[in-house]
Image 1 (spheres, each protein chain N blue to C red):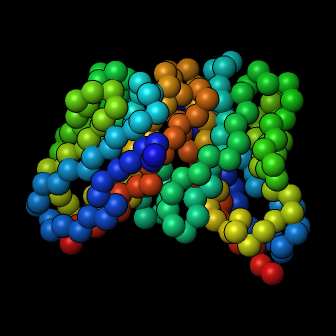
Image 2 (image 1 turned 135 degrees about the vertical axis):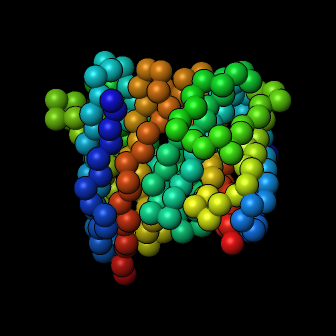
Amino acid sequence: AQKITQTQPGMFVQEKEAVTLDCTYDTSDPSYGLFWYKQPSSGEMIFLIYQGSYDQQNATEGRYSLNFQKARKSANLVISASQLGDSAMYFCAMIGAGTALIFGKGTTLSVSS
Amino acid sequence: DTAVSQTPKYLVTQMGNDKSIKCEQNLGHDTMYWYKQDSKKFLKIMFSYNNKELIINETVPNRFSPKSPDKAHLNLHINSLELGDSAVYFCASSQGAGLNGYTFGSGTRLTVV
């Protein structure tokens, strides 16, 4: 069975600093996709970044990068130069063959000035 | 030009009532989903439809009945509402199996009193 684990219930960071949100996963599928979504207090689910299991390079999208370590089954999200607007809940998610997107329990990020 | 739209955004109703949540996507996707986000923010798949056919039906009480009149619409009908049904329900869509990700609606906050 597939599983996503986010072990950090909450993280605190100051503006302009970088922060890493941890995510580990478990799957026996050779082909899978890893995602990060942001959920601000307004409630919508915002797609941030995607990494395919066969991608050789780590995905990057602006200030977001995904530190993909396949052997360790980890897919950590790195946010550089944090902004106040980054305060939100962040979900790591995975999809495999024949399965729907499954989510971790989320990490609440608080950015302070 | 909303990609995935859900109505209503908020729904407050009494125990025992029957209610529906509607979802429409204009992305041309062929697969749609319903997720439930509980009070602890955990997101769990409920149903998935591909071209109007039920693909995934997780362990959900049969009081919940999805209906897909066409591939652009997936509605959720809930009979005999219970207090424990209070949650945020998200509709999502993808092309095919969604290995490139899902697009989520803005959610419907259901409160059963």
